Length: 445
Image (cartoon, rainbow, N blue to C red; front, side, top):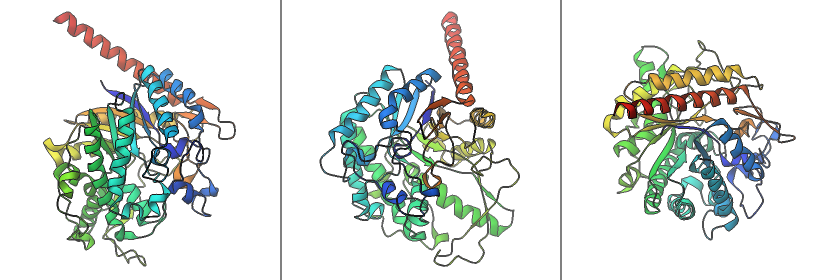
């Protein structure tokens, strides 16, 4: 069964940050620090999904979605990151999963979508190797409660973005600016992923995957310098997080002056390379890269610079709209990893546009779904639109609207957009075609 779904994240929609025993997360801390988010917006209330989830589940059911990718808030389950579980937190997700199952919607929880318990950040966060084990312990608690109904799990969301924006550049929580010294964060996330896979298997999970943010990398020219810069960026953005999982080895990081990764211990890569049942791919746009100029102070001299993509339309966020980039990415993954590449699930794809009659979003989704279909030889088994609801868009606060459903953040009123009804019609037509094909096959046999 092909999964048609939407995706959300706990801190971006739940609100209720200090209710029912939830502990503070790094995003609670970060968003309350002056100057960290646009206009000082926080996720304190967000979409109030913690109280309004029945309405949101009903919206998914009405659209005909058969899957929902949501994230579980680690600090709602273990308020201090480890130690005794919070029953009220487990109860919340228990009720949500029950409601999804009753509506025929496959629950696809992500176990870490950036809202790390602040107590663990105080111990070093993902720079602390011990956090990998703490993560696996938390995953085991969740699996014990939900695995009788949840069959498909995602360990981490976009470890590249969390490393670079959270620890490298300070643009996201926890707001550290370590540049290349943030590399241990990549390894500790991946080690946590591998340990979490083991915990999920022990808990009876049927399908386990990770969601990586991937991008086609375009050199600004055919010059050797630009080609080398593009290769270096591809290594950092894509291969640093795909290679260890799919091949059991890190790519060559000598372009970054890191030929040896001294934080990798014997046996780590075997844990990271646990067999997976799927690879989640989050795609938004390609990245154009050129040779480096003068290094910024303290940057460590990155071997690339970003070049603008100006020959395509852009979203309200200023991101280039390149549907064929998704086809290019999928075919590149197949060419790179061959038989090692598990089935693909597009676990995020979407765009920010204003308005309820969002024809631009319809065109965006239509183009990207067509690109998935055009990818030759790639086994794609699901497509999740980002996002169900307009929500708290991290450092942008409430200024970017990615939802199929408009949210009035003053009243919390939900209003489905034109794209919501377009997707509903698309899913319905796909279901009708599938039923007709099954009927024809049954008649033939």
